[in-house]
Image (tube, rainbow, N blue to C red):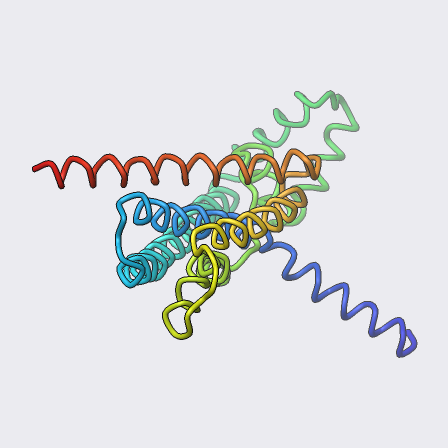
Length: 244
């Protein structure tokens, strides 16, 4: 392999390694943008001061992002732990009751259409290697596949995405706090957040393998609905509180 081929191979390996976490990045980003924009919309609807919007926005951003990343980590770790538990049981059964496990392999492949001598050859081949034997039992008997992604990395990518994308609805308000922004803050926040929804919706299509238009439209509609609900909830609550 020459230098150019090696460089391309390394790039592809790096790309495929981190491409596996695109789903975590997308869903973390969607959640971050939706929840933070909803907080901004609710605060604007309630007529709160811009300083309060920044405080509520960052409190939500950091706390919810952490909670979501911990949830992603624990969920993935639970899946891995459950897989490893059942895998250990299968190893024990292969070593201690091999005749029963061999019978299970025969039943599995008989159901797939194998018969007679061919069936016995397949069973002999599988049971000749314990690792291969256990892998077959995990996939064909328990219908379980091993999670290859790191739970820690899944939690980290989710948190980074939540913070990075979720920060966008707050940028204009932060800008205005440090140096006055000459424009409608909520309008520009809505524009920038819509762009974020479009980008994250576009990336989502690579995870769900759906059309670009569908992915972008779904994300935009989700964000718009959350914004409308939050705005009017804030507006209604403000009215009720002021009346009292």
